[in-house]
Length: 427
Figure 1 (cartoon, rainbow, N blue to C red):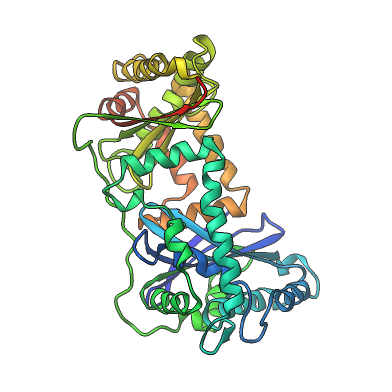
Figure 2 (cartoon, rainbow, N blue to C red; figure 1 turned 180 degrees about the horizontal axis):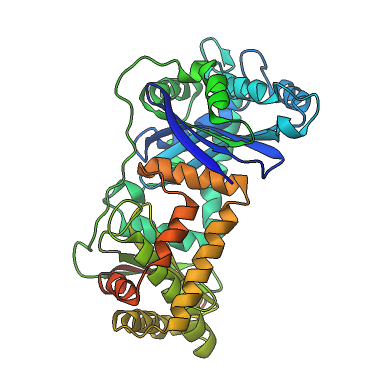
């Protein structure tokens, strides 16, 4: 049985602790939460990768690697994420749970101290970041930004989001822009680092056998929790319940062999913290969230209009997106059939079998989270960024009571906002 606790450890510092005997490795996280986008976007995306290169005591990757080897092969990775309209940057770590390793007493404390050193006591040269480290990670960031277009299946959803939310922070990329990245210098990066430490909310996470009060004491013994009391960034995401105007359609030609059709919808306000998210998850799953959904069975299987078709409820932002791969010639037919399946949901054309299948799909997905510490870490970070604390078990309980009427109501408040078609350049 998992016991989840959340506690404020200091000014702008929170710890979420999942105590469970299920896993043989402990998962740890130190993350700064900051506003998404803005002039520091690329600097902040680059920051954890430069910090990961060395500390004042361990000045290079070789020294860090040797230290991790001494910690029973612990791992620490830089992380850059987007949760709602919040940018999350920092470090993820896992190590052998000391309860299962004879002679490993104190291992968790040592890993936590290393995480603290990476963030709070980095390797500097002349009071700023190492020029070589900065240049290397700047080049890597530029490459990562450029590489996003190499996978059309992920680039199309990203373009839809940019278009759909172009006047909202959510439309901003987590990595910043290539133009921003090219201007990164060691001085600018260090200044952005100081601003981030001064502004960010810090989210700490532990998943393992250790009791929450013991974990709290370990983090409290580091500089991570020793901050002066002031106003720090409070994660928040604006939810637009309905489109601002009539649906718009954007077609862009790209050098791809298969067209990508994406549709963005507003959810009537349903999101992690408002509306009826349980009913919306059920509707989204019936509509296009599984192999028994209307989009899969009708648009893909029966009519053969697409290679794949699925719907995703982005609960952190309160939007739904449908993504599919199609032939260029099938654009209008596939678009209209996707919307026709939505109309069927709005009209109440939903069977008991579809409801039962959706409930089983969601239940299986949330239960699977309980078996993966990395997935649990991501889940609880999303909850923290949304300012809520609802467990996967509670989500399962919420969908148990969802009626057909609530599912239909969720479909009826769904409104088309943007259609994006990445058209293959080859006719």
